[in-house]
Image 1 (tube, rainbow, N blue to C red):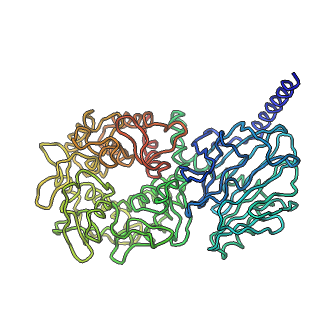
Image 2 (cartoon, rainbow, N blue to C red; image 1 turned 120 degrees about the vertical axis):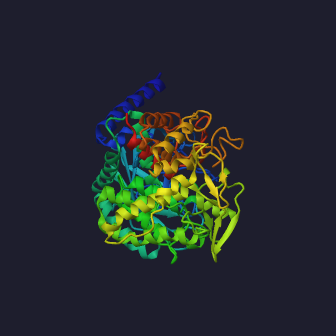
Image 3 (cartoon, rainbow, N blue to C red; image 1 turned 60 degrees about the vertical axis):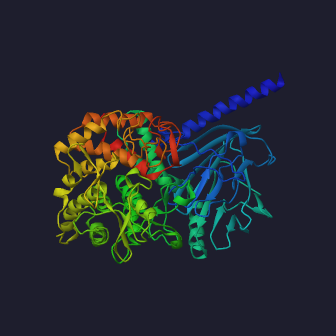
Length: 635
């Protein structure tokens, strides 16, 4: 009976505390989207975790502990570039007069846009923790007890190559290369270090803030720690700024006329892009967005990914969009080529190929949303040089129609340049040499030349803004006719010998998206796009027609749906008057992709037949195109 009564009292205290938490939670847009993503993971010897909370360009991430492996602190940080956990949980929290081994039971956890939240209780009461990033180098952990008791912090460093030191109220952890992180406690706190473990000897009652700092090298350490002191003195001010930043993102994106589930998708897309935002570091000279922070080989910037990211970011984070564009042009070759991908260590860059040309589209969208003519003037010469590069280095027979290719003569790199690495249309392709260091497929691709036609149109529009003259030949008028097969009613790649590669794929939607198809051609193509045996599958717009013998619903570019292709297809048919069909397809995407309206991450691609998630989670260009589909949807 006494035990039951004690549990009842604890339950009542928990209810009171929960009410207090609710009353003290500010009215923020972000709090409409609780548990936006499931990133519950307690580290072990395996690094299989598939997602972190990261923000503001930071190269560090945190997770929420698993409820069945609970530790009373956010897990991490995890170094996203080194792919290394600094700690299981560098900041574990309990009551000051309580044993560190006390058992805490999770009451509630959530990943809100821009914030992690947890509440957990021991026999002494409940502790609430919130974690936010205020910039790339600083995060704030805020902790309080519903009973206003003093709190105690402790933790352990996992990485064996980290050196630990204590400086008054600050714990500093440093890797051998000079990179590191620091915990700055309130001024009256004292820290005891024992090997790779620490504990705070004193703490104050009420809400307690710990500033978590990240520095890239010895040069950046001092200013970063100086800022930590400032933030520790004014934590609420900086937390409010972080909250306002996120409310601004969401306010710029969300529509009041949309269903709640669709708004959740849009919010998740913003979270995905922002968690993949990485600041300039090492050989990356500008900020940008990686394809997926959850996959080690994706921790760099890719060409056509970057252009797509920039278009979506122009709506709510335009300065990041501009820097995403700048980052790729930082490595433009003297010939004008924008290389495939770049990393913080330039030795990992891939310059064997480029990627499909969408750079002028990105710059045009940034200008449309910002009116920043200075940015256009800065980038325009680079855009023009890139456009001209294609016709100089990827037009084998000099007929004004280009091919995908490579710099090293390999089929592999040429397939990468298309962006559709294992596409069926390239199964029989061969390589032909154009000049030293310039090779092409022996087939001209419809999507590449439709992209170039749009680039021509946009460059001509941007030229007067940049104060430049644009006098490149306009080949767009005949491009659609060149690739259209009348008796098939569809667009196909064309071999250099004049025969067509008769594989029906989503590349045929690009002439519609670029606006170069005639209405008659568009009408013919839409008949196939709305055919349930071909492209109007359960999840619409598979990369290859579903009745193709080589179709594989989970076969990378040989059947699954990719959300960039879905966007090009839906946007393309909308341009030619098929609004109802475009909205129906959008509904199918929003309602049928598994986990999209729940807490699952947005993935790289999806199974055509059932919407199952495939390949990399937390995928940026998928998020970018979901935002664009959301924006264009007519409810």
